[in-house]
Picture 1: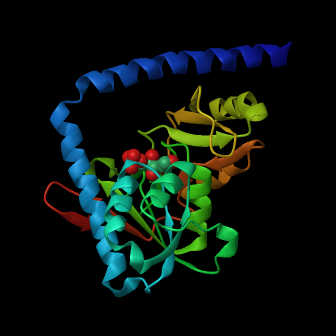
Picture 2 (picture 1 turned 120 degrees about the horizontal axis):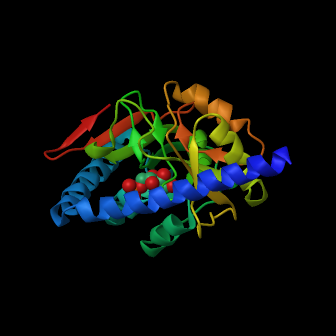
Length: 259
Ligand code: 5RP
């Protein structure tokens, strides 16, 4: 009886959170002006180009293998890569979407198991602090992204300045879960003060589900990442803090900043 009541309560919380989320998404869509998207794209493109220039500026050996993340900022990086694809020996990709884009410009895709050393990994983020702790997973590719980041000696994170925050958590934290454990994990997230929202209709490249967790107070990102990793059924937490980015390349209105 107790179990059933608590399940219903979580069901209500998740349902309530879902409706709030739909509402806030609508508000965001109505509030953003058309020029904002262009400005944000220009910043993403600057960050992407600066990361590529850094690699080609003597930091990456000719013919080396690189890791490539996922998302609209990374898409600018892949577009820029097309002009110098002969300098790259191949790539380990973090998602099926990125694999398709890399193959379209003639970059060979390698399985991580075939690669001994991965010098650089380039990826975006949904939020970043200047301590280079990140929230990732807005594009649902967090598991492979975390694996490739762990394998790389240097992780360059490319973002526009709107994503740089003093404390993580305004962007809901994505957590990839095994489908049968979705409600079990959600209940435990509610118990620690989170408001999990099931990203309905989203199935990851690994066949799993995503919970987007609102309202978490993230004062110690590595500690929270480790705590959430202990919940049975959690595949990957979208906090990248135990292994943070090594360099943040921030696209701004007038150029790039490094952190
Ligand atoms: C995908 C990610 C992306 O890096 C993140 O969502 C940022 O995407 P975008 O560059 O489109 O803003 O973590 O899982």
